[in-house]
Length: 192
Image (tube, rainbow, N blue to C red; front, side, top):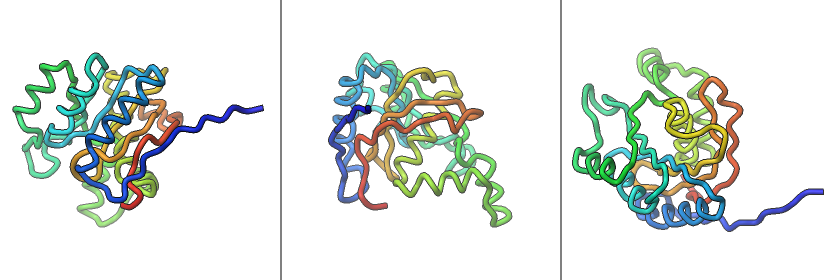
């Protein structure tokens, strides 16, 4: 015997920042339904992170930004005014090496080859850029000790800018990566 759970999934016709408010709203609704109190959100400039902190008040909100130097050496892309507001609202900001690229990106750039992490990342991109990023930021937040690994969290990410993807996920640390479980898709684009 098995039980069935049917929940609606929102599929956006196109990826992009215009989906941010709907994605955050649905992610909040699903977190409330499931009693989830931890949310991990990807944010480059901090704009999406700040929106998430406003939606997920009284949650453990972890904003994962690009590592310093991602676009150009020594430069942090998150804008200081967003960073300050996120912190004031109780959000935690994580700056760390990307779990699914890191040094492998340097190997690819220098030698024109890829490693196993890049293959995992490309396989996850079959579901969309946002799903890949949701998995990646969840591992990063777990490794930093900012979210629990013994209960589900909501992860929110997007395609380039904004948020267009949200999932329910059981986290794991990077050394136990394959223990992670994507439980539900809340929203995602239909195209890449």
